[in-house]
Amino acid sequence: MRQRTQVAIIGAGPAGLLLSQLLSKAGIDCTLLERKDRAYVEGRIRAGVLEQGTVDLLREAGVAARLDAEGLPHDGFRLALDGESFRVDMRHLTGGKSVTVYGQTEVTKDLIEAHVARGAALVFEAEEVALHEIDGKAPYVTYEKDGQAHRLDCDFIAGCDGYHGIARRSIPAEVLKSFERVYPFGWLGILADVPPCDHELIYANHERGFALASMRSTTRSRYYVQVAMEEKLEDWPDERLWDELALRLGEHAPHITRGPALEKSIAPLRSFVAEPMRWGQLFLAGDAAHIVPPTGAKGLNLAASDVGLLAEALTAHYRGDDAGIEHYSARALARVWKAERFSWWFTSLTHRFPEMDGFSRRMQMAELAYIRESEAARRVVAENYVGLPLHPSG
Ligand code: APR
Ligand code: PHB
Image 1 (cartoon, rainbow, N blue to C red):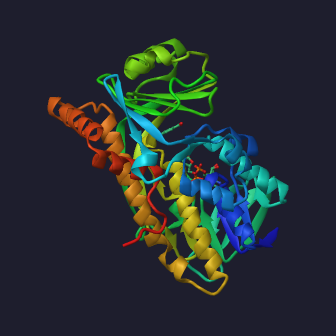
Image 2 (cartoon, rainbow, N blue to C red):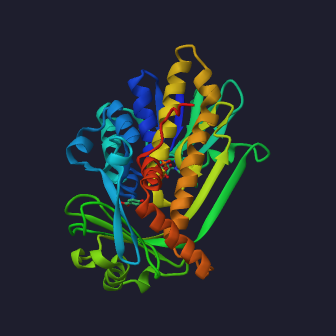
């Protein structure tokens, strides 16, 4: 079968779904091709901290009703060293900015529901997706669905297919430059229907390793502990994980409510950026172009800011102005690299590195003490955590 659209979007994760929703609002025809089925996409457990910019985009996309009703505004978070914590007052330090706690899983469900409600061209279980004539005037995408071959002619292709997708790999090797740091540990995460141990997030640097106390609601908690990459999930029964969390969260341990894991998994940590984020008529957005360690809660928010810039650029193109698409890669990468830096720095500050000697440990302790004591240092942390401006001044 042969069809035509203005923008072919590969991948129905947060990036692809939000881009499709924003372009549709602007009257631009797009078709989404997703490899997995709806249940798989909606079942992925991911992070849950939204920058204000991301909330604004979801409102602009018309999918923020549940977010506005159920999202938890957070004005600050806590940093802990060996069990003792202090607060970073984001709202005060950034002149009124904050973040919203709302699961990425929920964001994805809200976006898919909006697509289904408007009868959007969202193809699940699209197999063998391939990109063609990317740097020509008539790009197209081929794929298979229920054993039938399809060709989708388009003006542009948005590669929103994540780190393991096909879009980035369709850019010629001699054009693509990539940059990577793989961290020598992972995060063991648990999701449980128990109240959080505190009303705000707690990032803990401990001699035994990093821990994070987060949440999905006032009745559902999300916790993480740093583990060595060779750790196996079967070696971490719930009780061992709850015990380790209590050790690393110190003064907050008495407030931990234990319960059975709804989900438990170990995720690797890496920093990754691919340049450029545009090749011909192909634009990359989200994890297709970059990965951050989850410490700074930037993954979903970077995907959203890429999509905000790309939706603006493509909308302007169809109104006769190509400045946005010409500058998309440079503008997106400028923001991506600042978020990569913050995520790398925050990970380096809070985790126990295998080769860490006494000097390195004391550098971490001194930097945390400085942040505790200096409003200027806390302001730097706060303004990066709430999210840097989409269009920086100066
Ligand atoms: N063809 C079609 N779809 C594909 C292909 C392919 N060849 N390869 C991957 N996909 C789909 C995946 O099944 C997934 O649903 O693309 C989607 C990519 O979604 P994400 O990986 O969630 O990436 P993105 O939308 O950029 O969102 C980034 O999600 O993974 C988290 O931590 C990450 O929070 C960040 C956010
Ligand atoms: C989460 O709630 O899953 C979460 C929160 C903050 C992070 C990472 C993950 O930095």
